[in-house]
Amino acid sequence: MTIDAETATPVRNVGSAGAARIASAFGRAPVAGIAPVERDQWTVAGRYDPHRPLWRAALKGSGGRALYVSSHTGAVLLDTHAHERFWNWLGAVPHWIYPTVLRQHPEGWRQVVIWVAGPCVLAAITGMWIGLLRVRLGQRRFKGGRATPYRGWMLWHHAAGLTGGVMLTFWIVSGWLSVDPGHLFRGSGLNDRALARYERVELPPIDLARVTAAGPTGIVRLEVIRAAGLVSFELRSRKRRLVVVAGRDSYSPSVTRFVGAARELVHGGDAARVTRLTAPDFYWYGIDAEPQLPALRLRFNDPVATWLYLDPATGAVLGSIDRRGRAYRVAYDLLHRWDATALITNRPVRLAWIWLFSIAGVVTSASGVLLAWRRLERTSRENKQSIPSLHTAA
Image 1: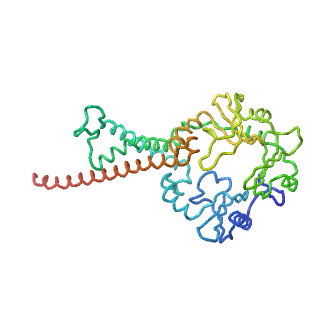
Image 2: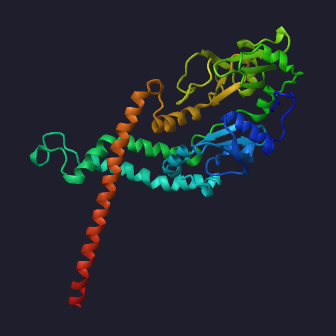
Image 3: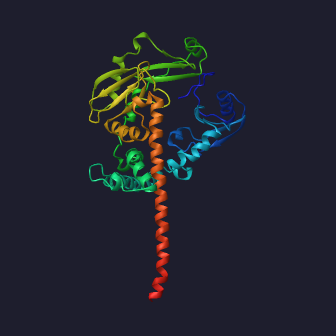
């Protein structure tokens, strides 16, 4: 539920005028035009479904900046500019096979990715195997003491394939696994009814003046959070976060309270271990920004080994992951995005790592295309030369 900060009433629908006002305040620029959008290239993902239709507000000024505003809550969901959209057309859209006409059908898009990427996986693995078979590092080397029999572009392809081919193979295979072929990594998730019970708390009358008076100066966001029998008000400025808990002192937040309430969320298990995280772990992390911290990590001993991440100030569920989800974290995220904690915390090393193996992958792919093209040309010439001889023989 979204509450209007001026009237303290629930927000049910946001019209064009309201969306334009929100976009102008958020973007700090006048709105040049606003129009309803059901979905377009930049909002085709399923996470925008609860907010459709969206309001697309084009802002005045250079850069082609556009904001997408929810028609249900008024939240600014996406902030884009022309530079980002241009590079996405060259990068993310072809990489994920993401044209709107296909991506708006999730299962159809998923099947296309599976069957397009599948042969690439086979080609990468067989190519690596053949490349390894053509290496001689012992005393039985090729002529001139070389470890490879190839020269020219074949040498480039072989050498780049052996150095970057392992990473390229991991990248292709993990990309194929990202759409979960055969639903190998489909987890059970949290029970929706149990989660609804966990968050079902009667909302008390809201005295915004009293609540905001307790918050930091320059408040830009106020969120009402209901969890574990508590109603909390989260107030955020651009640099600070403060939580105010509504109700009597007996309803104060505590780890014991949250752990007891969270047992309802996980069927068939108790919290075997509770850890307070003040730094990201292998499963609770972010690439461009840190996840919400501190956080409580609850490891349950249920059949699927569920882990819950809770906000220690409000009891809100920040995330959950089970055994299959943790396997997916390694099979896809780690091997595709190289987001191990050590690399994320050392951005230059991570970028150097990605650049090094990306260049090796580009050389492997480009040389492979060139060699294949030359092979096709040679085969075509040989076929043309053989045609006259067949007629002559006839």
